[in-house]
Length: 440
Image (cartoon, rainbow, N blue to C red; front, side, top):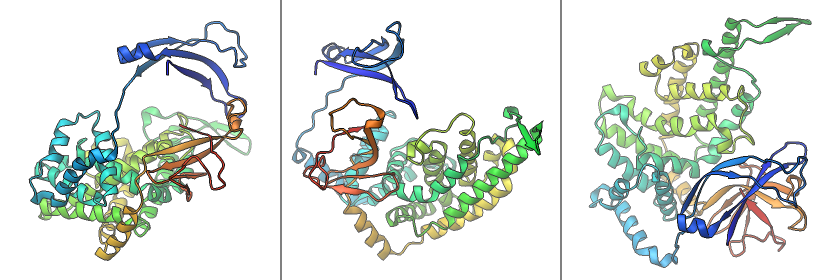
């Protein structure tokens, strides 16, 4: 490839998308420099129909990097795989040098990629829970303060994040989708008096400005209802949670209780579980539902305040309503009764969550280990005209895909049951027709 062509489009919901301009980057020059950064002027394209003239189309600020990666046949990596698996199987009883070395030598910027790749490796080997258990023990062995446990971007934290996204995404959707849909129906919610915007309300044709007190009270009622509904849905979801997730949390709960015994540390095992379940899984999904495929689009500026405040409330519940969490934002006080009730609900939920029989764990973990870990997943756009027409928005059908080493599966929505294609030719559907597609 000699040139890389990038196009900028103005996406429209109803009408046709508008072409804004293109830029061409010389790959040979980029190969020598490895990186280019700056403002790139948009150029016209005679083949694109535009409603404006070919004057100044503007510029885009980009950072473009070129990286070559050599991937060898899988047999070359087998000695490393064997060494990693051997260390994980031995756990803390073995010498335990390789996993700590990987963590020490990986930078903060790349640790998420390292954690994700290691997790996929151990999922494929049926050792994901053992890998995470080893990381739990390593972090507990070097942690003396309970308030810092699993709060850093360690390999254990990043690996657990990746694990929950792989094994618990369908569970997350089942709990959150109804709540998020209701949240997006609320157009304006605010608890911070310094950010309140008064608005007009009407009654029998008479309009008057809504007072600040009315906005705050209505917002508090709305958020209490959302938080209560979420906690109730979570409490009912014990059996819906995948057994391998429950077993991993059980192991985490047990390790933390062994490391910090005594009545003064009664809440520490619960907070260890919620540090992942609430702070690193549910709260981020509530704040950015599009990133977790809970919604098609990001919320607008006014609507986004509702999920943000709800996520803060979930974090307070996950922190077991500590005085420190309450002191940060005193204007969250109207939610405190629901938060305190939620702490009791959450502790009861976690107690039931980690109470899983060994037989149930083994049966369901075996089912998961037979499923290949996804190599890539996300939106997939199928070109309806199979390359015979222009690339317009109406020319594409949007699906969600999951690509593993064995199959390409797709569905209409992320939470729908996926249909799989053969691994021997993942670009061919069940009727033998070629599927032209673009990966987003």
